[in-house]
Length: 390
Picture (cartoon, rainbow, N blue to C red):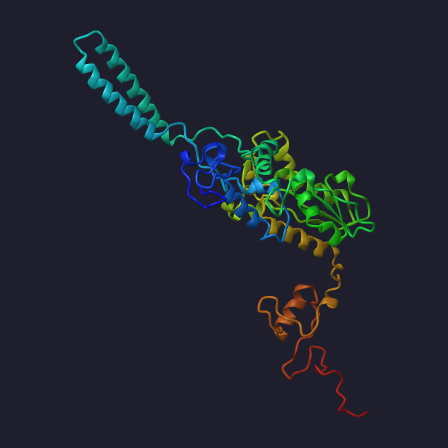
């Protein structure tokens, strides 16, 4: 690892007791002790990247997610061909020893052990292509483990967390706005702490709540949620429970995650409620079969794992949309200028106009006669003004 003080590349023996042998200064994290990828230089660079070089304040929960594996973890199998090769090699070695000691009574026992190793090797080789049972995928650290492993060690060595990083539980929400413009519902404490730390509620006069029961009546509602079955169901319940009021689902959708899973932190929970598939089909009929199957396999993506800059932009766009005046419902009020063909994006021809009128039921459209008159004998321009009185 690189010493965060003198930038020397340190071997394990050169950084005993978390101290550099060159500059004699102590550092906070050692990847050999605390886990792969955990060292001071990486934490500083990652914090600077997450905070957009100090423009944002990020939380410890977001840093925790940023250290997670992206995409699905590697597929595990019941056996391993490399283990099988090792067992075969050891069996050959024991066979040679058994031949050498064949004159003694130990040779037979050693040969039996070699045969047993061959059997284990064949089993490991055969199971190398058999997938292992599904296992849950959880965060690398719990909140308490991350605090003791990273945050407390960092404070002990440097006195304070890196610039731009705050601990989730130490963010004070502050007083709610006196005249809120809308309510933002997000049960994720890390996301709420991030929005409070960046004064989102002050800039947009937003009332941030974590429970649907705490949403006051009469205000527009924005729902931020994970790409999880329960997040999508929470948004559906919010829409169903507030008829006549504006409810905006601005959460992370499963459709977005499935476009490229490698860009997201994927977790897996295998302990779903038994009625979850029926609830998804009943309350979320818009989900496709592949999306419901993804949820049924236990996969989900936490909203807090999004890059902070993208997460804030998501909340900013939601605030703009929920506070914007509703679009006029009268199609004529929205349309100005010549009617355009929906397919070609150009002024529609008379033939297209007639076809559109026939499609909506104007079946008494006047037909033109051979002399240019309409079907009722009049000319297209209206009454014949050139004729005088009889």
